[in-house]
Structure formats: C-alpha cells, structure tokens
Amino acid sequence: MKNIKFEKKLKELELTKKDFVKIIGMPYQTLMNWKSKGETPRWVNSWLENYKYKQFYENIKKEFIKYDNKDKNE
Image (tube, rainbow, N blue to C red; front, side, top):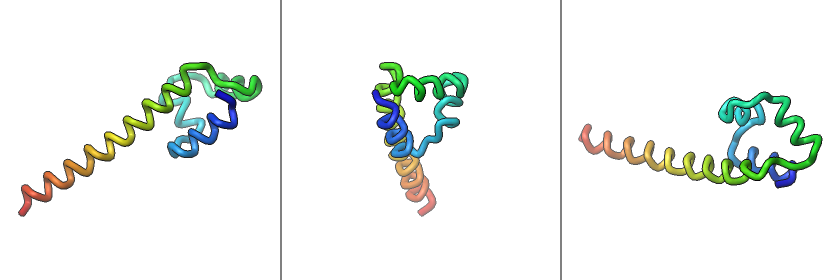
C-alpha cells in the first residue's frame, strides 16, 4: 500500500502513527523508513482492516452491555 493511503487509513481509524507503532510493538523509526520508501509492507493493509473490524465489534459490545445493564436496573 502506498504511504499516502496508509496515512489516510490511520486517520479514518483515529490512530496516530505513535499509537500504531505502540500497538504493533515496533520502533517508530521503522514506520519512518516505510515513509521514505513510499510503501508499507503487505501485512499492514490486512492488519488495518482487522483493527477496523475489531473496533466495530468492540463498539457493538459496549452498546450491548450498556443496554443489558439498563434492563437490569429497571
């Protein structure tokens, strides 16, 4: 994936570059090296897609728990 698309996807996911490297567990400099090359490794796109779905399901889970707790309090 081109670096411009990578940065756009990070923004859509509300992730900073620092957040991304922290979650991945890699040095920030590695990400900067990708930028200088203009491309990311192949695995990054699928990782971002999985992160997107995880966030989606985590939000559904939170809403379900909130709704479930509301029913218990009534």
